[in-house]
Image 1 (cartoon, rainbow, N blue to C red):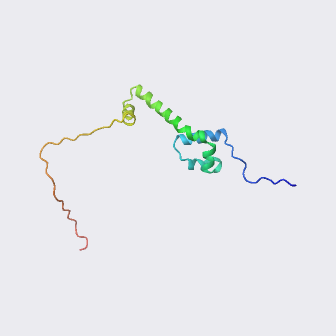
Image 2: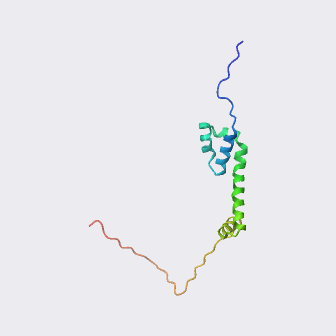
Image 3: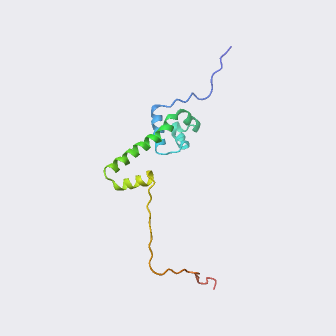
Length: 120
């Protein structure tokens, strides 16, 4: 009996370069659907998720750790702007503005705006 030939695409096997490319795109926040479009002229998003699990799971974490480390080093070297940013985003600090007013305060009850008649 004659053996049937297999049809369809060969199984997807990512290359090291593709893994690096996916990792870099995930790290900078490119959506997975868009990443899938540029791997080998387009792969299905499910294929991306299946074959690049580690890159999708870890790349953003590693990028955030690197950026956070750089920011932390700037703070430790006296960068006041970086320290303020850290305090606001990581420590919950907020800037508070207070407005003081002296003198009499009166309420405006009604404002009438008179516009020129354009129909005449």
